[in-house]
Length: 300
Image (cartoon, rainbow, N blue to C red):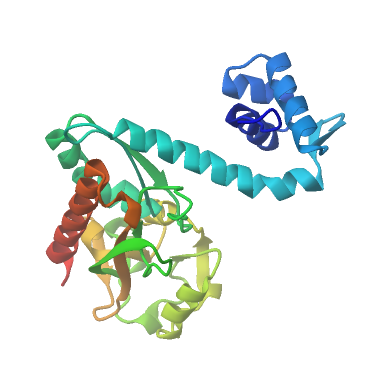
């Protein structure tokens, strides 16, 4: 590193101020003193020759230059974390940290027994789980392994198609006792209560176009969180979309409208550079095997 090169600590402080909006809040988040963090920002601005923040009564406001540098600093943070995970995994045996990303409902409802079995077999393994319905960038090493509901399109990835997860319409028995059981999609109209999505993505529009009887305008509860939708179904709020495999575990959840189903393609993907990392390779295989077992056991 030359005299003009900022070190990683400066960029970490820069990201923290962007996220927290003030030196005091950022210093508390990083466990630094406020003068130290302020010195990091001053040195970074000096070495880059840029003004990154302006002061206001409400805190520090990022300049256009700071916003432009933000994604590059995020990439640096992801790369630094990836280096640390890789370093912890070096040596004999299966050890170190593996970072996994998955959708909310897969991470909460499907992966726990798979990861528990994996950790019991390899007690030196450390697992990080990022729950998000957004696609994490494996090439930038936001995560090591991803469980995805769409086919990966990025090159330099090892990807394996696991199969299709079936979704159906379900409701709690308490709801059906109050409102009755619809016999067909055309029966799911007022006063029936429908649980659905707040944001209709292109994928959801494609799915719903195959079943025009389901009108998003009829959703009485809208939320983009699959976990929240599932919680509302369990609470007896109304009729919603649920993985058949999850509903089969719960006797009080009843599947409705025989023949109605939607399919989610399921993939496990990993950066190809990790193929020789024992911890990542073994975790990849454990996820693939566990998800295949889940799908095969729950496919009608």
